[in-house]
Image 1 (tube, rainbow over the protein chains, first blue to last red):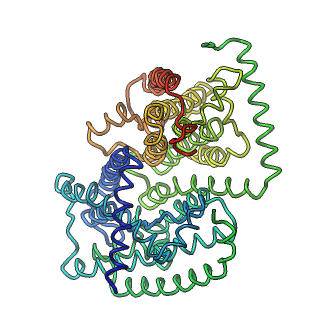
Image 2: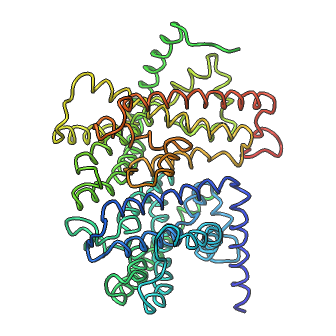
Image 3: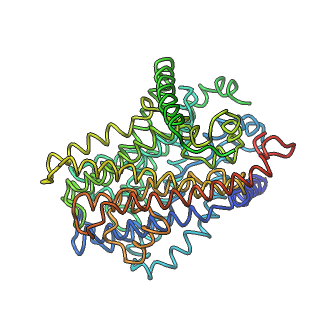
Length: 263
Length: 285
């Protein structure tokens, strides 16, 4: 009984991964951009910190944080095709498929992440000695807890995705403007680009309580051994529960609007 | 038939800019909700794009050889370049691969005026596109007030020339890569998104810490260094040769010539094949 949904999830993920190549054969240019970005960020940290320690983070830790943030960039950003589906009406056909909406979009994203993992993340990890960065976690415990924290991060990210999708639907807003706005704010608040302990004026301590930090900063801090991992993961679990409940309520109350938009 | 810029065309250019400015204002007044949404998102994206570097500069009192206010100047320069592009090349004129890939270039080609004139005027949105220009000006005044820089009329002229050069260079690179969409409309439709993503993300970084080869690459093959870092460095007199102030406009000119050549070749190909959009098996029918 359980194998059918898993097979469906796997097939959807595989279709998304192969579709990625078919839709955009110039995807390698995007990977080049990401690689350049990593080089720039690493050089930036070396230029800023030198041999200093800031916010309890020495330069090797900051470099590992930056590298791992790029290696797991897609799950740590956790975006789906939900806004596109709402925009072009394909959400209507998705509702008819014998699979839950959340599972469909999650499978789509997993497929694309798998593709990026093979073509970008693994080569980047292999290139890390050449970049002068250690890709290893802070310790055995950090290495073991990271997958759990990453899974919680994806859960919070997907919940945020459906929550924002529901708001977009409710406010009848343009998904591109809404998505770009959300992406810009999230990048800053999530701690993916700048480790939260390195922010000035104690902003990191405030941002750390927000759900955006649960998507990126928390797993990265667990990996690099910054802060208490159990506290971070408890916060992630708490946000996951709260946000999924909120997203569920929002989508239930928006059901009629969704019907009006589809097609 | 090729039409070259003439005095008549230039007066028409000004007339069309005025017309598009009026239309932009009318759109803004008529649909205030959309205007606020788009402008708000542009403002937020602009702010987020520079905030990370601002926070770093504040936390570490500068970035490498750049003092805190010099970083603010770099960010103001990058924001002003974006502001110029938003104002002059909106509605996917900058993202030309979208228009080409979607077959929308036909809408421009059927107009009874030269293509360059349409492309220079269709995206002119001085009101709704000013969400990046205004914060850029604010950052510029903030940095200039604190920096011990002698701001002479000559320096302001160099600043304007370099800003126009950086904007022209960015547009040229977008058109150079966007020309791919003439040969691969489906695959190349979003190639300008990648190009502009590269410029928008990387131009705010001081490139001083990079290795010589990587920095050279970012000043030649992918000339993102000329989008803000190199001209800002020259304007702040942070080193470099005596001709550094003229380098960005010169590179912009060369890149524009290259882009014009690639675009013309693509257009010639398009003249033979046309758009797939209107065929039975076409994309985005």
